Image (tube, rainbow, N blue to C red; front, side, top):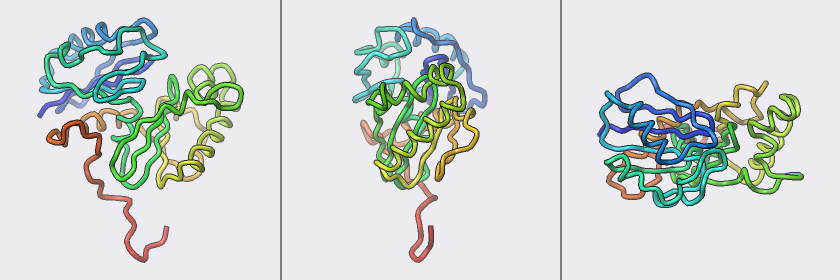
Length: 238
């Protein structure tokens, strides 16, 4: 099956299809509607063959349906029929969860995406659980208000890095993951990664989108394919 992966972000929409090596993209922004996104993606993907579509959406998703309008895009996303618009089967998942799925190596993994906002997802033994931690209370505002794009611009790298380190420490203490991946476009602004963390790559979002369709027989599945690595052998030390 040939799949078109669409990674919808607050500043850009990026696409990649099975068999292609170079992604294509266009600017998004606060006025981009769901209908406009689909039209632009279809134009941009001309010449590419695909039988199905995987979409990473920056907000809550349930059963392949958007359930809340995005904070950094236009309106018209809730209830939009992507399958009808694309004319083929479509799976929709939270964008952080899609990148997490592409970054997963096994066990219990926490993914934090530093970008326009704060994307969060947890994968436990292959089962993906998107989260909206970024909008929960933190200090005087929310987590996202201290580690987002706007926070970086407002407070500068030094203070922003301190808040990132504190957020990572709080969430890892609460969730106790085996593996922590910090992804998103702003991971490059970290001088060094927090302890026991590894850097993600935005390209992993495409890998996650392809994985969504690897187990096409399991309807509605958000389970990652079995991972080979990061399983301890008996008697081994951490």
